Image (cartoon, rainbow over the protein chains, first blue to last red):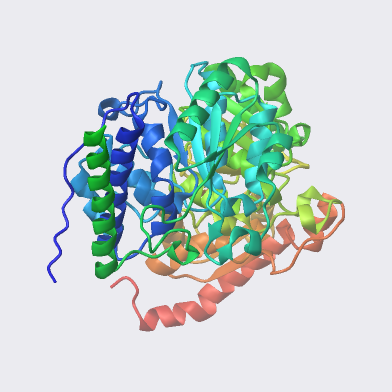
Length: 304
Length: 332
């Protein structure tokens, strides 16, 4: 069987968009994830696919202020991927935003690549704000950045961070939560990828972290729980955060209910896909499924 | 003796004062508190620059990583706690977020070693040098007294890169002056001599000077005392020269002998010019409650031990090692 992988050089602008456009973008991100993980022969499919819809809205819906041509601009918003192992979705997003050429996605996890298995600052990949991978640390780094924006630089910028839900078992994330509300970091938005899966099984079975909404509220957050695959809900959650940042002294927590492996029928909601890549047969099938979704979308758009 | 004590001043005071001086020079200096600000004297900075001081509470992991966030935003954050907690509770944060990121974060490890005294073993950190010197990008300084701690603090704020400064609680003899040279990475040779080299850091530098004085007085031995305040990056030249010119080395530190400054010296010696070495430090055990000076005696961290070890190193060189050296000419 011959199977040629290529990465089209499509990029997307960061602006207000329709639901259909976000769907289109998320399909491209999911294709990139499947292709890069297949080529890498290792890596984390589940969480990467499961968060693609959130990344599509955050990076391409006008919510995160960045400039790929001058990405170190001090007045940028920050996005810190605390859950470092889902780096493939971050890399795909940065490539599609124009931080680097999408063809580089083919180098994921290879010797000499800027796309390290977990984000590495020393690899000098544009758009990577920090190394992450030891769970729980990125969120505290993000608190430090938000603190700097609000009290030292006194800018209107925002800091976003994403943690997993299993990651909340790390005690230091609650130190970060305490500090974020103690310092009234209303410019700070914490997204929890709540797919209820971790390597050993359901989060509930490994270590019960629930109830989440109440926990974050008790820690002093404005909390909004959403369907992490529903673009309207994602959009309104980020809009609410932006409004809160002006009117509230509380940091925001978005608990996004997601399905690991979303978009690929045989991966969806299966924790066995946490840390494995698709093999050739699975990659072909996955890409066919994504193409089919794409065709359906285009068809329905024409009908509209 | 060429050096005299100007009295006993706690090294942590040097840290606290150094921060204030840095704060005056550079608006990007920021300090994070870990509840014990009046112990490690970051309180001096807090009182002077309240807008650049953030209390993080008893949360060393969070404080270390918040410091990284500040550093990645162009600030120069200092965080200090007892060395037992600012080097170990946050060890993973130091490895991944500070060192791997090469973040410009400065950590003060106060109250290190047995001289914390009555608090006992839990608070007497004796292992952090072994850990910290294995971290790529990390600079590690163990200053000898009050003035040197102040200089090290200021120098670390003026250089880029992750830095750990290890200092103590109790008042030690202060013998360096505000004028004496301090350059990160450059060892200070305090006495001239070619009979034996004594590398010391922290509280043991003063003891090494006392030992050198006695060696000359009692035995006519001229010891070369070297203050190895920077353990990483290590001063290769000072060590190799000492090995070649003295042929016998003693190391002395308030730390486990395993993996500490002595081990760092040995790594350079063994590779470049092997000579007999004696290691003074804590012998693979935990600390105890007691008064600082009692504990230094109890654990043989004193000039008498350095004196005896110097004689032993010289004897090994003259009687044993030299015979081997004649068979295998290391110079060829």
